[in-house]
Every structure is written in structure tokens, then in C-alpha cells.
Image (cartoon, rainbow, N blue to C red; front, top):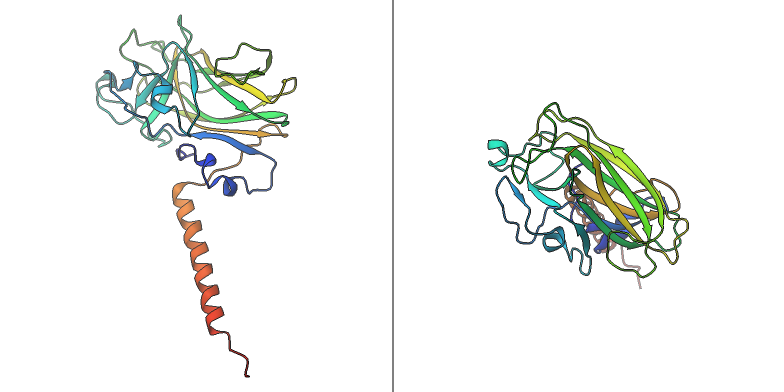
Length: 266
């Protein structure tokens, strides 16, 4: 899938995004294409600015929790491994997030209210990749498939955090071994996390890389539903343009038809 407009589902287009015949409500959408003040710290990644500094308040009021360094990687630069990160599939856009699975446990936390829905569903792209500095490379020479763990925790106090309440459910997703350390090889995954047992609808989604050394993720779409894996598709910007053009054309034709309607004789 192509990268999504950041927080599109939480703008005025949310109604359209949820129009397909399903019960899912999109809670969050982020393609990480609009970092605030990205700085290349060397190696085509920003390590010293946390995710919340780069992407917090997208949309207004949203905040991440983070443990250790969760890097933002730049695609199309020239420094990583002496040539820059490559994305022949065109999935990652210009920026993605990277996590380490070794001694320091990089974690990302996102807080939501799922209401009375029985599942929090998460669509995400994951890929093997590596760093050539800051202690890297972290992936073995022969490569290693990354495994991400997505865990859901009860969060009755509606706090921003990494999950310290009752564990509700989790799911592991494993990607593929990439062609090399600087080229992405994306796997699209959808996980359905049960919310059964939560106190008041407030939950925390924790993202952890549990194997692989180092890996990347991108294109989050998170939805609440009574059906596992139910995540509405959000149209591409080009698709929105076509839809709006079509609506404009229909409205224009309707206006012309009304203008040509004969006036009854007196």
C-alpha cells in the first residue's frame, strides 16, 4: 500500500473513510511523512529527537510514549551504508520508524479509547533494515527476519504510556529477510487484538521488536471494531481527487438539468 495521509481518518474525511459496510471506526492513521524538525544525525536517521517530538500532536492532542531510541529513518538519502536506504516497492515514502531488538528494548506506546468494541485492529507495514552506526549493524550478516509484537493493555486512567495495566492480548508478526541491510522488503500485516476485559474502553497499544536485530515499520491504520481484523481502507490522495472531481461533475450536471427545466405556463 502507498503511504497514507497522516491522521487523515481524524480529519473531515473520516466519515468517508468509514463509509464501507463494516462496523469499524478508524482511530488513528499515520504514514510518518511529516516529521516536525527532522535532523539527519548521520546515517540517514534522526535518533536524538524522540518520535513524540517529530510526530506528536498529529492530530492535535495525540501523543506517543517511547522507551529508549525509536529512530526516524530517511529513505532516499546518501549516507546509510554509503548509498542511502532503498525502497524499490515504494511503500515507505520518505520516512519510516526503526526499532532495535537487542539489549536495549525500544518500545512505542499509543493510547486509545475503543468504547465498547471488542477488538483494536492494526494494519501496518514492517520490513527488515539495519543501521551502519550508533553501535550497528545489528542484523547478522546472513540476515534475519524481524518479528514485531503488538500488545494491548488496560488503561483505566487514560494515561499516555507503554502499558502497565492488565495485559489483554497480543499478536506477533514476522516479516522477511531483506536483500541487504539498506533495502526495504515490506510485509503488510493486519492484527486483531481483543479488548475483552478492559475497564472503561481506554487501552494502550505497545509495539515491540522481539527478534531480528533491527527493523522498520510504517503506514499505521488503527481501528476499533467488533470484528477481528476489520480495518477500513483509506483512499489515496489521488483517489480523493477523483472522487471529489466526480462529485463536482455530478453536482454541475444536476445544476444544468435544473436550469433547463421548463417553467410551467401561467
